[in-house]
Amino acid sequence: MIEIHGVTKKYGSKTAVDEVSFTAQPGRVTGFLGPNGAGKSSTLRILLGLDRPTAGHALIDGKPYQSLAQPLRTVGAMLDGASAVPERRGVDHLRWIAQSNRIPSRRIAEVFETVGLTDAANIRVKKYSLGMKQRLGLAAALLGEPRILVLDEPVNGLDPEGIRTVRTFLRQYAEQGNTVLLSSHLMGETAETVDDIVIINKARIVATGTLSEVTAGHASLEEAFFSLTGTQPGQSW
Ligand SMILES: Nc1ncnc2c1ncn2[C@@H]1O[C@H](COP(=O)(O)OP(=O)(O)OP(=O)(O)O)[C@@H](O)[C@H]1O
Image (cartoon, rainbow, N blue to C red):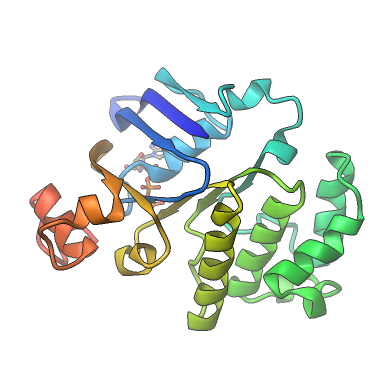
């Protein structure tokens, strides 16, 4: 389970995240939605111990990320795509992560297979398309067989088939009792993938609930967002 409790993040006089609280439950895919600059990445960076909150705290299975005994076996994360060295082959990128986290090397072939990148394992990352880099990032997140996945914009750059593959995978992953938290600014896309929704706008949470609760009374999730935030299509997305 993921718990965010009253997290605030200030950069100088700018408040990027303002008293944000929500949970992501096991067995469910939770979508963390909001326009560009709403505070999604800042929140996820705090959750993953990459940044310190100005106030509040974030817990993974009841502990801050820094206190996890085996972080990559507990939580798999993808921020900014694969973040791999361009000169490296995909397989070397994963080998490096596996070795530095004492993850058995058999997992490398397994995760390449899972994300459909087996044929590109020996190609240098600089030759990967954006979608292939996203798949490599997902493969890296899955290496430690974590019970929790945190993915920042996982379908960015994927074609429709790639989006469907990732969606099907994430749904099955959650159905096995795992926790999936994914951020997106693509509302239509996310609505088809998630069970629960957390909407952030201008650093603040404006709605949380199941997909049907958040969209109740609206034609779509997009309509719900515009109504909740008082914005018009095109103003903030
Ligand atoms: N290191 C930083 N220094 C100063 N301001 C920052 C920093 N990181 C983020 N911000 C600001 O905080 C706000 C929230 O940014 P954040 O990246 O968390 O939003 P986001 O919802 O993830 O957006 P996007 O979808 O564009 O990634 C933005 O106004 C951003 O400019």
